[in-house]
Image (cartoon, rainbow, N blue to C red):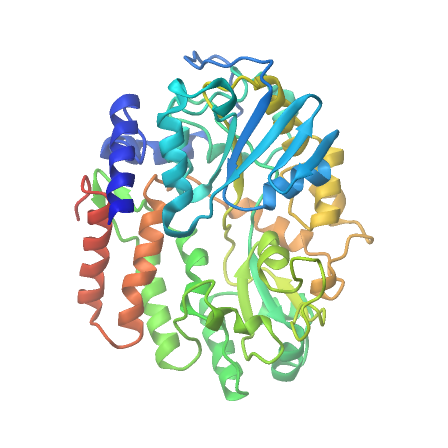
Length: 474
């Protein structure tokens, strides 16, 4: 309870100070989605005024994040970076300090909020210089003065940003049109399936042939029945398909201060209930041990849904030392990827410069090197199997016969993921997406398991969202 109260207080303080934050007013949240849609296909402009205070010459570069992923990218790919410890490094004569707070129980955002609120009064060497955000809550920070304009305040050129995918810019463009962050990765998703099960049930593991079997949701259900007859579940959980449905909505989670259930979310609920009752899937929580059991050859799960980072970062193919996990499907090089019923995206990490940084030059250079430089982007894709945020690099990698993913049995997944980029639509994002996403999955679990009626589960969802965001109603 204390954590929830602290989070509300911090969000309220940010909102009061900056007229937004944690979603701002209901009008702000609703209009931002429209702004994002209208910016699609537009270019970042440089005719924006800013009240940001940035300087150079700092001796300590403080970076806040929630895991080791970005830290590893910097260590491996930023020219001149010297690792000095598990959470420290050097760039020239500047000390780099990594402040890593895990995401669990909203701990990362709570700690970040507290630090940002104290930014003006912090000692010079303690000020945040750069922090990371995810798509589900990016607007909470983008629409405040705690983030700086990448172009006007940091000096990153529009030309250097030109090769980035537009949706990655839309997510971090504020309501005034200022670009407030940049990402090194794009996150279009696909259906990741087991080759051995595909051969046993469908007679082929060829991605093109499998795509024909899973071309839409009706075909998906038909294939699920075939898999069940052979003793397999199509997915580990109903939550595996959630992002595919939620990324194809036609309305926002919150409109005019009211919680809105889009028809495609309702369809996810209906389809999931049917799939559970037919024994095609289960209701395990994402990231639980029961859910991830399908990553092992001893599991009976046919497919998962995810982007490039999910394959190499989450599917338990290698341990922390880089060794193959014995008995994993990945170690057997037995996964493959195809588009699946609908295109979607999931996740991504954006780098934001903090208002008050005294290392603006370094923040600028890190953004330019790790999110704009085509050579470094290609290097990241090759070494880390990321789908990088550079259209030229992706075009070259798509046709490369040398680019192969071991986990995928030597398949080049870039063309599959690239096919999904055109369907990504950011016009319906709001600052409340993370809360609504978490709470709808949690509330509907009892309904899927037969422990609550649909109406009772929906009432629980509304209650939990409104408890976290008292400014909302339904």
